[in-house]
Amino acid sequence: MDNKLQLLKTKKQWLENYKPFPKEIEINLQEWFRIELTYTSNAIEGNTLTRQETALVVDEGLTVEGKSLTEHQEAINHSLALDYIYALANQKQKLSLNEILEIHNIILNKIDDSNKGRLRTVSVRLKGSETILPNPLKVPELMNDFVIWLQDEDQNDPIKFAIDAHFKFVTIHPFVDGNGRVGRLLMNLLLIRAGYPPAIIRKEDRNEYVKSLEKGQTKEEMDDYYTLMINAVDRSLDIYLEALNPKEENVNEIQEKRFLTTDEVAKLLQVDPESVRRYVRRGDLKAVKLGGKFIRIEKVDLNKFIEKLKK
Image (tube, rainbow, N blue to C red; front, side, top):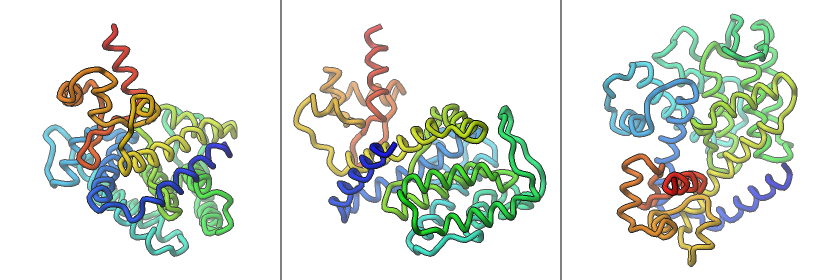
């Protein structure tokens, strides 16, 4: 793990070299991360809004036919909670229980007003999990200890600190609902404060994510959890780096990248760029749009598509 953390520190140093970021790219990245974080974090908890529908709700204030009012409100709330954690990150003040309660207050606003911003006073169980959560009577003391730990400024590594904070928080499970979303927001607040982009736990990683948490909570085996979370931070760093410096000279260099532009994918598939755009519109290839260019969602997605074409 130490070698991987050192690599992420190196990538962060590369990222620092591009500051100040070009305004257009910085805005584009922020907008993309806002929708992606909102979509994925809610999807992990069962929200059925698609990525595009999430953008319509958050950016346009539109309603999506066939989706519940709660799902719409979850998207709105998460976007507002992101605004709040970015504001906290800029303030650099030590986090207290009040800030954590406010994040939860925003997340459950107009969804569960009787429990928003309040520590749970009832026992809860995780469906399908062997994890035994703390007795509600212990939650206030556990959260007090957690905040004291959170305020310790002598942490060895900011990435490990952030992902440990997430694990500790969801293991306490201080709220009746909304623990996962608040835990991921708290982790990303700490990452942003340390100069890293926020980490995204993808919808397709949900089962692995849940299993890794349970493995850590029931068996104290943390390797799977650390691997998944460190990879999430690594992906976000690569998104930033490749959006800021997308130019590559040859196919070998392109193949080493994690995210690819439309023209690069066309070169690898030996088709014209319009064919690639058609694959994206059709849903055969997943893509995000940054800096006016399509950037592939990881080379592994492209490899799967190539295998599908061969068959």
